[in-house]
Image 1 (cartoon, rainbow, N blue to C red):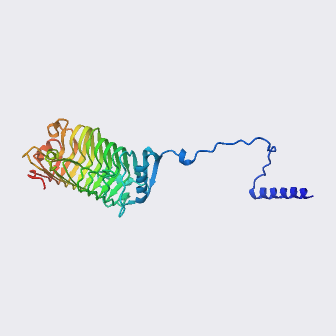
Image 2 (cartoon, rainbow, N blue to C red; image 1 turned 90 degrees about the vertical axis):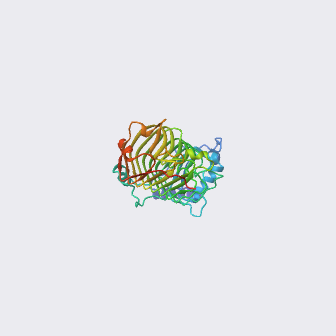
Image 3 (cartoon, rainbow, N blue to C red; image 1 turned 180 degrees about the vertical axis):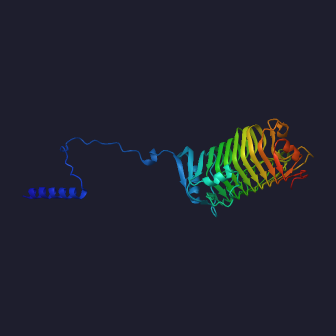
Length: 393
């Protein structure tokens, strides 16, 4: 009797479950054979032992950056050879010590939101309008860094193999004893849609790098930045052993002052190139705006001091700038676009530049307005002045 009741109850429960689920009850086609031997499985490896090295890291705060930097510097084996760092929030380092990446990093640092929106880029690039300085965009990705431990790294990201910075901005960075902001040395460096604003390097020689193999700089803005170095200087980079590309670059109200090295030998190499000090390979310059910048050195060039070859040089504008030169040897040092191409002074080569304008500026050295006009430059409302006799002490 009990067995019959149990069977009835079981059938009732099965009907109730089927009604609630809206599905037909499952009836096994055959009864399992419980006498068969149990098949054992080898347990899977733990996540710790099987995890692949991380190749993507997401960071949304200054604290998270420091945690990542400490982990990367101390436990490099946890990370892939090429790491993409995605910045998803503001990294504000006010009252927080920035931890730099130790030498050896290769990867990409990018923000989810671009520095400049599509409409603003069209205004600036396509219509040749000045940078919309009042545009309130995503300008504060990485901000308020004050000094770093130079024993850990000589720049924010150390010396790298390959580095890409894309859609990121740096604001209010002050590095009192560091010669460059991004990397000291790099095999390859790419800057795309990057803005640097209100940054100062009192002993700086460059914003981006000292030595690079190849460099590509596109949609780059440096605004209200100050470099006060010695011996040599390149506004964006100093020495490029390979090729260089500069396109859609805007330097606004930047100041570069170069004093010769007290050791003496540095005096003769105290040149400033606002984009680069020298490029051994081929360089291209396209759509370069330099506005309200001041530069003083043994000789100053708007683009580069010396370059192996030039593939493109067009759409370059200098407006409201002052380029002054020291004259310790009496003559021979002048400001311009480029001092030399190969073994020859640019001014001695046949003109190949296109759409070059120098307006409302003070230019030091021996070249005159007529010298630039012979090369097809548009020159308006400029003063060409003799060089300073003595460098600042």
